[in-house]
Amino acid sequence: QVQLVESGGGLVQPGGSLRLSCAASGSIFSINVMGWYRQAPGKQRELVATITSGGSTNYAYSVKGRFTISRDNAKNTVYLQMNSLKPEDTAVYYCNARRIVWPTPIDSWGQGTQVTVSS
Picture 1: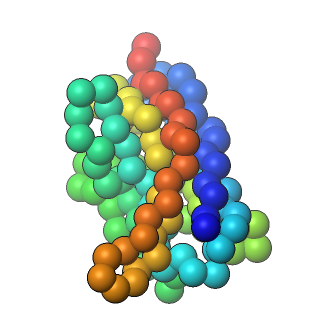
Picture 2 (picture 1 turned 180 degrees about the vertical axis):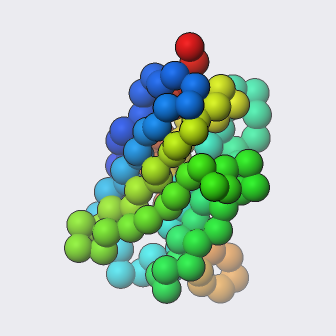
């Protein structure tokens, strides 16, 4: 299967920047889409950004223009560059790898990394 390890979270002031990393190992050849999700206490897990094997990206409206998802295929690593951070960005951020198969996609998840935006 796929193993995912996130890193790069921490405490940052509003307006600051942070870059998250997700290193993938295992059956990485089978991954179709990778993405970042986040979950704040008492809230639903929400999609932040995704990137397909073909390089197409999409973002939640709340992070458009501030966050950038990218990948380094040689390192099997996906990044989330977060700029202009806001307190509402505070959450545990999870890396996701999805294999699109019938009848339902197969998802792998990292352990999560805490991002706290506070002054």
